[in-house]
Length: 255
Image 1 (cartoon, rainbow, N blue to C red):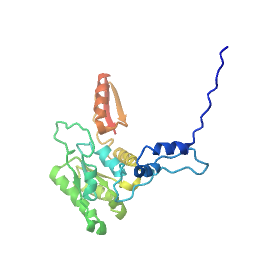
Image 2 (cartoon, helix red, strand yellow):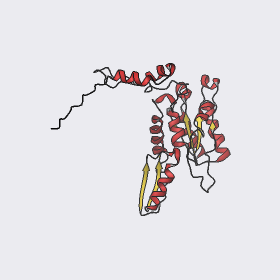
Image 3 (cartoon, rainbow, N blue to C red):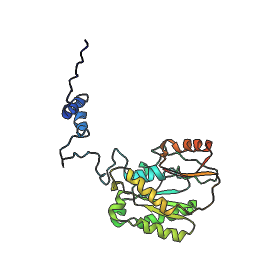
Image 4 (spheres, one colour):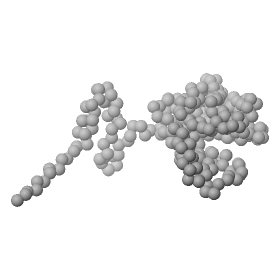
């Protein structure tokens, strides 16, 4: 007669599991990793805080993307027909310029500003006395040189700390230039715990200042808008190719 044997249930202590994981690392690395491995079985009202889930410190480049990088680098970076102007120190502009694989279609109409990096290059005196006049002069210079249809202004950490009113400057310059849509993003790097806050800020301003400006009808029997494509690897081009094979016209894409 066959007999069934019951398997003994093994009880794992989360602290022991964590200790076992950390054994694989050299001592110095293990001390750093220990802060990132959280034990989930927390007591009531004693939930551990993930170390990375804190706001960035103004002026400190973090290992993750900041709010500014999410706004300017991810979403607006691939827009070839908009001139992107960074209001801040030159290091901020470099941080979000061609450091990611922003994919775009160069087009045939000559409007392709994606390979340009514009910055107000704020110095110490601008931090002390304000940089609004410098920003206004930069917008005017870009317009005189290139006559773009649109100029986007991006605030970095120092701008938020000193209180430059980039939105009033953008509105004033839009009225002055007439045929150029100038708008701004309050996307200071420290505003969120990661670059995802920048994604929201970018899309909100695109909805407010760009959407609905061009009512030219788009041909196609089945038409959609694509929300949430991630432009880093050129995903949108492949999605459009597949949609086109299905007879579906993609009117616009929001990354």
